[in-house]
Length: 128
Image (cartoon, rainbow, N blue to C red; front, side, top):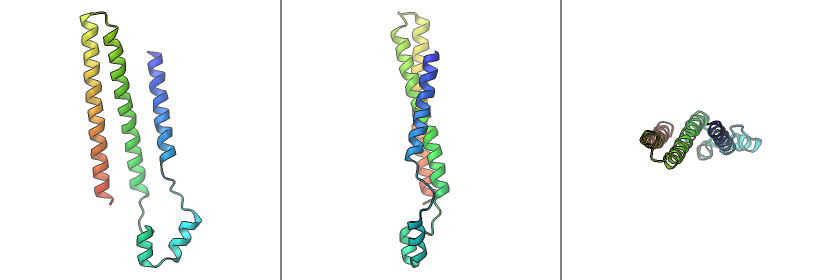
């Protein structure tokens, strides 16, 4: 059980690390500031200088990161349940427990995928 817990923690750390690496940096650089200062209204609209999209991007990244970890945990639960099913030696109680774990893992994965879709749909419609 300790090995499984350590694997889950390791996967969570890797997922959040990957999310942090791929997250956009919100600090404006000097070239962006200069381009926005020197542009007229039409150019500013094309460059996106008038839009403040930091909050929606942060919210989207947080939700996507959490849902990624939930999805990874659901897959790990399915894998562990499969291992328990294989090693149950035909014991009906262990077989039923493994089947329930697989069912709950699949339900968790479906919920995570649906939540991911709903969050991205809502945030793309609200902040676009």
